[in-house]
Amino acid sequence: MNGDTWVFGYGSLVSPASMAATIGRTVAADDVAVAHLDGYGRRWNYGSLHLRGNWHHGGATVTQGLVVSLGLVVADTETCNGVIVRVTAGELAQLDWRERDYERTDVTDRIRLDDGVRSVRRDVGAGRVTTYVPRPSAVERYEEARDHGRAGIRQPYRELVSVAFGELGDDHLDQYESTPSPDVPVVDMALSMLP
Image (cartoon, one colour):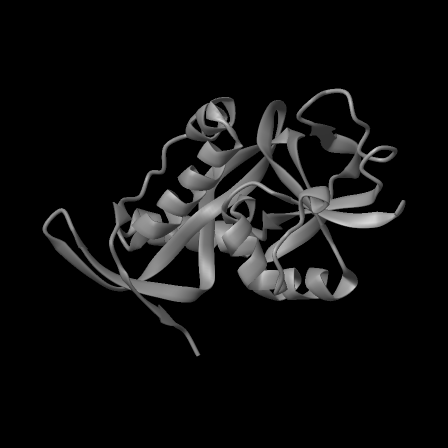
């Protein structure tokens, strides 16, 4: 159906289980395609608005530390791999809630399908492709917590994303692993939510 809305996932949304947990259904094969987003680079730069964690690392104990996840930056010479997933209006609203400290951004004209043959608009039927880019406040929150040694990445999150890219194939895992290394520790943490 032409004019559908698709969401480009470049981190945990590449995982079918993570996407299904948010939108409430298993994503059918016809509703997903491997893709590349030109002009953006993936970074460990998102500081969660709502999640906090407790962990031990390098002899230090961190209580109510900031949870860091993947985000994007505008980078004209870079490309970010991931998947596009067709969603309904209701599912998009659920994703907007999950990603509420990200800006939903139209990237339709920057998406290339992995096979280099199919057209996003013609063959996939994407009227619009959006993705989630961290709000400046989320990046600032991350930078401040990083600079004070109070930011960390959840080990299970990093593993989930690695497995998801591995399932796309070795080339995709290699592209994901070329993401600049995080400058905060990857730790086993106990999570809590801010009210």
